[in-house]
Image 1 (tube, one colour):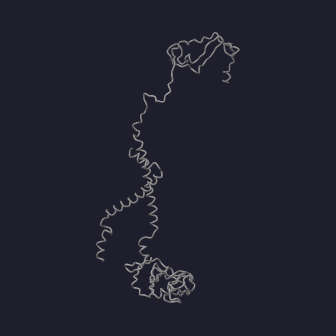
Image 2: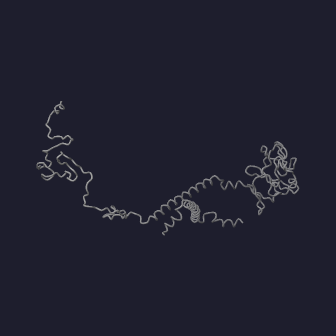
Image 3: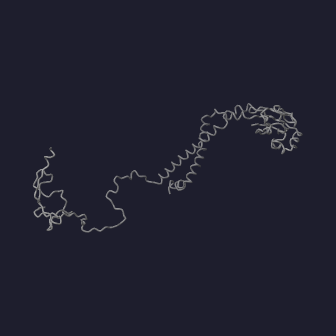
Length: 62
Length: 277
């Protein structure tokens, strides 16, 4: 049995399973997208954010 | 009138006789007569007309009883005898499908079906994500921002307040009373039969730690600021209309309907601070 037939039989055949999968996927996608964008943002702005330069100043204050 | 000129009355003798049955009798009619040779005819020369239906479809014939025209609607079979074989096998055709679409047809329908559903599901997934984040961001925009939240809290070092002293601080534009109560005051606040008060509330319900009484310094009557360490009950006294509050901030006398209000606060044990807000 090909992979498409397996996919159809497990996920798409019943609408309840289909919709549940869509919502679960949306949840996972939201988390993944957020993580990816945050990682990219932090890497793009490396050395410019407060959390990157905090150690330079936090030590002198203590 | 020209119309009248065309109107001519001509009486001709009948060329055919009609039998009593209504069938015309034409004994002298030659049905095999041929048209004279016509050099301009489309058909080649004289002869039977090509558009005349064949004799087996019917036609006119002379009989003894008169002129008879017959048309066979049900024709006799043209092939000697045909046997019909009923079968379900598809007939083999010379050209099975013209034009031939097999080049355009999908080789695997299952693949296409799974792909269609996958695209539908992906669309739903992205839509659900977008809807969720739209709602979340909208709700986030309504909540207070971090700077507002930071201003909304007040920190106070408790060690600086000696026992038996009041401190008034400003929190969100209102005074807050903080009293470091002595053990005698705590006992006094606890001994009161609070069930019979105007706004019945036990001292336990009004403090998190018995020695620290923290409450809003706004009289519940009309919003004046009561004076500490005065009044008939050793607590607070509102000079505006004479409301007396006891050492737990409960109204005991005067027009005020409710006890002094308790704000949300929590103790930071590690640094010995109280955070109001």
